Amino acid sequence: MAPHFVLGPGVPQQLLIQSAAAGDLPAFKKFARMLDGGKGRLKEAVEAVKNRGAGALHQAARYGRTAMCAYMVEELQVDIDAADEFGHCEIVKVLLVKGANVDSSSDHGTPLHVAASKSQDGCMKILLDHHADCNKTFSTVCTPLIAAMMGRSLKCCKLLIEAGADVKGVGTFTPLIVAATEGLTDFYKCLLEGGADPDVPDKFGFLPIEIAARQNRRKYVEILLPVTSRIPSVHDWSVDGMITYVNKQVEVDPFFKIRPADLKLEGNRAYMRKDYLTAAKLYNMAIEHDPEDMTLYSNTSVCWLKMGKGMNALETAQVCRILRPDWPKGCYREGTAHMFLKDYEKACNAFLDGFKLDPANIEIENALREALKSLKASRAA
Image (tube, rainbow, N blue to C red; front, side, top):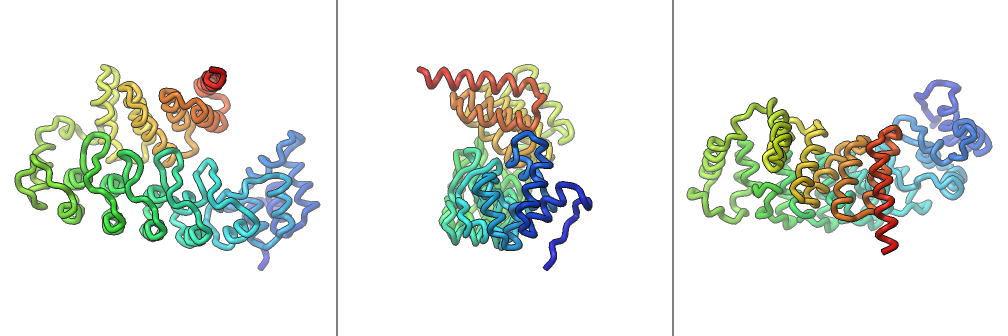
């Protein structure tokens, strides 16, 4: 099968990909040097080239060019663990045979995290067959199971649970809370059968069943009611009773009288008057209506820091990074949370990630400098 490319004809990037697929090592080296422009950063120059989501290493692996793979991995030290954006199983197999560390971490987590987040159940099965760690965390709170839920892949969730994934989650960021918040009804059964605890509340003290009832998801309440410990204040412990109870709570809660479009604005106002708990609640409610607005996660993280809740701030910032890994502000928020927790090495890593994404950002540059200074001082102590 002849390789098919969509990059412009004759451009160095296209020629680099083509030579990788063809196994033409002299030509590949020539075009790599051309793209590098004498900077001495061949690895970065090669990794930056993508063709429909796949890099030069993936193309070489796809066409069985083992010598080319060996050059990129052993000499250039190209990231052998970077998953193909489209999760081609044959590439995963070749890379694993070539010696890829099945649990090696990258900016997007382990290969298992990537497969889970992109709903690549075929690649996930291969990784699990090679004994990938199904409980390894990325950004403290994100397990492969959480990543699979973020990717809305029930198949991946089932594969992970069958492989022994921990369904309890980390802290208050549990799979059941994610399922309740995101409305993932089909995931409840496998999570509960796997041992998920329905009595663990979220950061604001709400149980999964309360979240489901608040969102008027009757089917979710029906599933959760028999396995949730009875709430003393709910006198009618039935599906209708639970929904009625939560609706009455909503009726007397002034937050729920705010129009969804105004939640962020009201959160900003609460923040300005230093009512950080109210602001965090309003931002969290706004997220339910607009989960694509990353500033809501960022603002919530700041609120938790202002309240001295470092772990909550970190969890929120890391969820933000998971959802949008290319956003410098998310890296900055994670870094500030690590600084608060005095984990200076992780703070440096987070700030550095943000600085790479936005080298002109003075705020991130200064934060990185301070983190490095703190790290040096802590090691000298």
